[in-house]
Amino acid sequence: MDHKKALEKIKKCLRLAASSNPHEAAAAMRQARALMEKYQVGEADVLMADVVEVAARSGSKMNPPQWEANLAGTIARAYSCRVIFIAGLGDWSFIGEMAEIAGYAMTVLLRQVRQARRDYIADTLKRCKTATKTRRADIFCDAWVWSVRTKVQEFAGSQAPSAAVEAYIRKHHPELESGTFNDRNATKGKLSDRALNDAANGIRAATGVQLNHGVDGQAPLALH
Image (cartoon, rainbow, N blue to C red; front, top):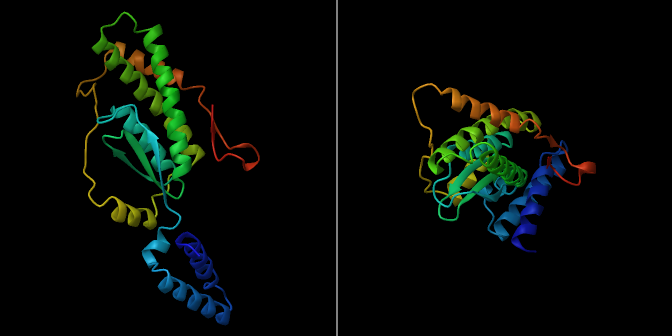
């Protein structure tokens, strides 16, 4: 029996250890303890058994834009995950029991907002200077993400990450550093009429985004 199968067996025994039958519960606990000792499995390993880490590729290797970070944070909260940015690789790494769904959602939504951004630049911002295009497109994307956030939260939820997720973080990412993201429109003043128009267009562009359960349980999440 390999380590993974042993871990599954231990989890099964621990579930049986909660039985209302005291003899069955005691036997299951003895078996769980014996397996844990034989395969060198600690309580923390059992706690983290259902936690997975799934990556979704960012549009930046080092310093993603603030709107992209907002999207990653929205999805992480909706699926009770933690999310970290792996600089250099350019990955958003979702960590939790539902990380696979979170990673899928991030990949699909990020692809959609990037396409909406390209279309907006081509249709509306094509005569702007490069720096202006980037800043205005960021406002558009920020509003797009804000609009989609409510849909994601309604579809999923907003429970805090489990203790198992926090234990996983401590074990596998013990040296996390706080960072900032690239906000190219950081300002303390109110938005101009042009910026408000860019935001309104971002909200309109997100109107058709829909999140649905897969058919017959074949897919955990479908986004259109």
